[in-house]
Structures are given as structure tokens and as C-alpha cells.
Length: 153
Image: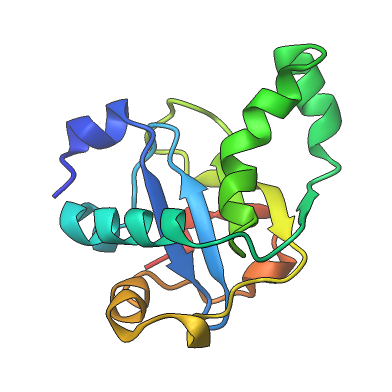
């Protein structure tokens, strides 16, 4: 279990699905869904599984991030920022980051990168699929630029 203190102080990698594709979120010290918070063991299995996958896709970085990242990091900082997100996206996952870092109750996230060839849940082994299906989003991941994660159950 991830305690509320852990959620408020850690940048937890967690995953969700729309029933077809897979999303990755860096929590940015935000509240994670109960399905994630209730099983640290299951979440660590997902992290381990997705990190172990080979690269299967090219990446499209969200073009709306350019100005935002330049304002935050200056020149050259954007590449460092997107590195972790690109890692998961090259494995076929849609990658999101917390819009307002360290604001525990704010559920807003923005798209960082999309895979050209997304990984589909039908390609997952059953034990991973069983865990992932516990954290579902009702909209299409591939159409989202800004995400309200309070809708992920």
C-alpha cells in the first residue's frame, strides 16, 4: 500500500488503460487512484514489466510542451525532462506528467509523449492485464492532451 504521506512525497510511476491502450503517469507527488494506492506490490510488477519491454515505437513529443518547458528549464532542459517519458513511450505507452507538481489534490496531468505504434492490452500477458484492468479510464487515451485523473478508477 502507498500511504498518503508516500503519495504526497514521491513521484510514483503508475499505469492505466482505456481498454485498448496503456497510459503511464508520473504522479508528481499527487494522489494516485485507490487501485494503485492499495497495492504497491502490483504497481511494482507493472513498473518492472513495462521497463523490461523492448522499444517498439517511435515517439511524438507533445508540441505544446515546447514553450512551457523552455520557460521552466531554459534551453537544453526539455531533453532531460522528457527522457523518462520517452523511455515508456518507446515501449508503446502514452506518457503523462502532473501539471501542478506537489499539489496533492490536483488531478490534472498533461500529455508528454505519444507512441507512433501504441502497445495494445491484447498483447499483454494475462497476469499483467489482470492488474492493469483494475485501473481504467473511460475516454480514449489516444485522444487526450490534458487529463483529469480523478476519472480513473
